[in-house]
Length: 199
Ligand SMILES: CC(C)(COP(=O)(O)OP(=O)(O)OC[C@H]1O[C@@H](n2cnc3c(N)ncnc32)[C@H](O)[C@@H]1OP(=O)(O)O)[C@@H](O)C(=O)NCCC(=O)NCCS
Figure (cartoon, rainbow, N blue to C red):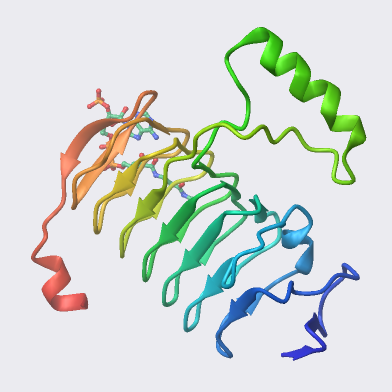
């Protein structure tokens, strides 16, 4: 699928960064997704077997950030803001305009925020990316996150759970649970036995 880490179908004249590991059966719609990618770690993004990312997905990954996409994980246009680690499990489905952020990148302190904004024009990539604490996000296998949902730093979403559209997930979600709203609350439980039939 690639020549010199370019995609033959890409409308954007970019390349897949050297430290992005892509399984041969994975799919990347466009390298525009890596415009803000600046991880220096090996495997800064890892695509598992059959994983895919589509137009609108942006890897806003800082120098010490790492993102892992499991088998057949599908990200249909999410902003992934990562300064530590974001794990997206096998068969996870992430819908349009979802934001996964393991860091706020901005201080709540007014003067620190002003200093950060003053630095933005000095950067090659004109981003606000203050070094504030980051807390990893884990999205376990078979999770479905509806469009426009937001997952905040440190949150884990348990296996098989569903996050409703436009929800703001501030706390861990147990396995096989549907949550919705802002802040996201449990609206019902799912049957864990379904897993036996589908793996
Ligand atoms: C989460 C979802 C799957 C729940 O569907 P459901 O189990 O049929 O839930 P219901 O419609 O029976 O709603 C149950 C309750 O949750 C509330 N609710 C459902 N979805 C909600 C949402 N996204 N935000 C806030 N509240 C929501 C309902 O208002 C209802 O509240 P009530 O009991 O006080 O009346 C669905 O609402 C949803 O958001 N789907 C996302 C679709 C999507 O993103 N598609 C993109 C393609 S990948």
